[in-house]
Each structure stands twice: as structure tokens, then as C-alpha cells.
Image (cartoon, rainbow, N blue to C red):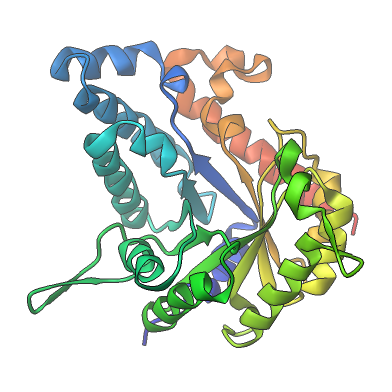
Length: 312
């Protein structure tokens, strides 16, 4: 029997006591010189060289944190910028995370309609037909999607999720400063993000795991008051929370994103973890021990969030 991925995610959070996901967004400026130098020496100053550097960087970080976290979130744009070799690195990263028992949230923010939306869903969560074979292309466990095109853009993903027992996180209120230009606009007296949240709750109610839906939401850590409202609007949706740490979100601000059962949210940190060695508090690790610095930053993040939750 195939386990629903949302149930597996919750089980991982409970077992590791870590309601967090690490974002693998490997910009070249984050990759230590010794890794870049080795890759470029082997492949030259090429897209292949950059992709190899990314793979080696990711692998070392994964090796140092896979046992203390439930999930990884690679942002596809950071790989796409290096073309086909970059996408190959994206796929290698996903496969390596799965080898280590990690759940992968593909941060792809897709949003389209009809056959195009279905193709995106198949690429990231489903299986594509090649002759008589059914093949997984990227094979993430969850994907982030944009709801701007309405149900026509969402339904193909939900159909694939039902087939494959996977899940989605739908953008509701994002953490960036200009998000309010559209998301905060009032519609019939309610902010647009709240109306989107109600629609997510409607979709979620039809796609349930044991206690939570496999239709989740993205709500930024930088807007805790809005997060508090959206938690009530979407009681059965897991909330993926970007914006902790580098973008200014604080652990105490995240408490309202969780339900009374201590579940219901998973908090992301990207550069705060993968580039920890460059931060003053972890400088003692040094550049060569960047992965050890990432592990310590992860341990500290888990402790910070759990401490805030213990006060709830």
C-alpha cells in the first residue's frame, strides 16, 4: 500500500521533532571556492562545471543534515539558470534526497491551464508516457503552484496528486515586500489572500490524508497577523512558511501558523542554512567545513522553533 505523502511528511516531522524544511537554492556565490575550483578544473568554465559544483555542494549539505530534518526544498530557478546541465543537477539532487529518505518539495511555482498545467503536473509529480512505459521525470513529492488562473490551473495537479499520492502547496500570501500589491487588495471587503485561502480550503476538504489534506498553502513568515487569520481559514491544510531568518521572520511569529496539535506548518530556511558558514555566528567552522556549519544552523533553527512552540 502506497502511503500518502502528506502522512509521510507528518510522520517525519514527528519522528525528528523538526517542523522545518531546508531550501537548497545554490547560487554560485554561496558555493565555497574549493568546490567551485575543483569542478571548473574538471569541466572548464562551462554550464557543466557550474552544475557539478552545485551537485557537490548539495551532496555535502544533504549528508550532514538528512538525519535531523524531514524534507528538502530545491528552488528550480537556481538550477534552470544553468540550462540543461542545471536541470540535470536538479534531478540528481532530488534523487539523492530520496536515497537519504528525505521528502522533496519542488519549489517550481507553476501555474497554467488545461494541457499545459497537466504537463507541468506530470513533469514534477507524475509519470510521462513513452511508448508503453510510464516514467517519472523529476519526481518530487510536493510542488508549489500559483493559483492565479483559478481551478483550471489547479485541477490537473490535484488529479495527478490523487494518482501518485503526492501533494501541492498553493501560493496564498507570499513573504516578499511587494506581495500586497495584488494579494492584499480588497474584494467584497475581504483581502484577496483570504479569498484564495478559502478556495484552498475548499480544494483541501476533497483531498484528505489521515488528519491533514495533501493540498497545502504557502504563507510567508513575514506577515504573522495574516498567517493567524489564514490558519483559521485553512484548518486542514499544511502551511509551508518561507521567510524565516534571512527574510526577517522570527520563531515567535510562527506560532499562530501551527494548530493546537503542534502540527500544521513546516518552516523553510534556505540561505540561512546553506550559506551559514558565511555568517558571523558560524564563521569559526570555516569555508572548508561549510556543511558542518549548515548542520549547526539547522540544529539551532529546530531548537528556536520548538522553543517558541513549547510556549504555545
